[in-house]
Image 1 (tube, rainbow, N blue to C red):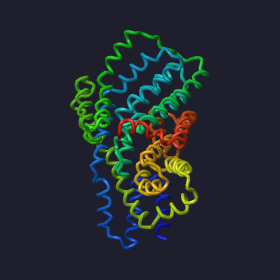
Image 2 (cartoon, rainbow, N blue to C red; image 1 turned 180 degrees about the vertical axis):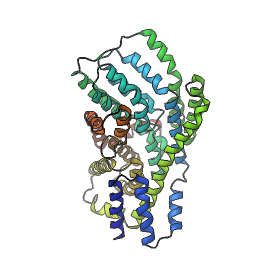
Image 3 (cartoon, rainbow, N blue to C red; image 1 turned 180 degrees about the horizontal axis):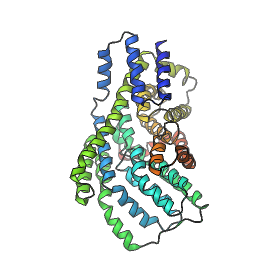
Image 4 (cartoon, helix red, strand yellow; image 1 turned 90 degrees about the vertical axis):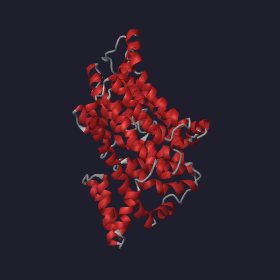
Length: 424
């Protein structure tokens, strides 16, 4: 009965748009009191949830993304991509995907990507004859590459929860992220054929060389970060710290970030980190309650128990993530569901790294779907338009993302190819 009341309370709070952390925390604390559990135990569970060395990489990667965003790195990448692809029909669509792909090596957040690039790309597309919906859709969908391509904040959280190699999960995410970029470019190709009034930019070798020089420094950032992790020189946390130091020095040298702006950078980092860690803590307490009520065992017996096929298990997991991703923050879903699905996936012989990549890709699609759809609200604010208009623009671009999800389910061994090559 207590579990039923807990579930009803959480659903009701989420329905009236109470922040996820508080929607989990309030009913969970009430459950602990009603069942005679110690509040001291609740406090220990909340605090211990974030007392993890791997999770220390999360605020550092967030700081890296904030510095890159405020330091004008996105502008440099956009100028170079425009100089390279502006002459191509629908070039700004490909530029949007390319810049998101490049920026994703420095920002593990779709929201940060959408906010930073949306301010640049959407007005540029509208000025050059692209429909607003197209600009909103390609920018929103391309921003999902950031949390999949390493360094990925969701990957760091999953690796900490599942006790798997962060480097291995990073490596496994590269191929799906590249496939996402290719799939989005295919949609761009077909959509721009219907737009005869699109303006193209004349190609200039001089402009290409000038803008190319301006991105040499930023391009070295992912080489240092990922090269250090995959080469075994740094742990992900150490690589994040080195990346922050490099990006900070780079932006100060470019004079695109001033010393007096550092307090704002740190404030934004602390605010974002605090929101994530509050979700992790509250979801951890709720996870303890679900474990106490034997929910993982019931789920294994009643939902996943009817099949012994690993592909069916992965398909059901993907559907579950797609549904949960539409209403709950991805971080909360990971903290809640990973401890439940991990032992079940082991019984099916599914590699935890495959499970992690599948869950992350599926949950990121939820960022483009109402009612939560954080990226939708960010782009709605950036473009000063309705959320429904953003969602309509994103719909065609969701198709290749779902297709890639299907490919992960059908060919899970392909996800493990790069980690195998690198010996991770």
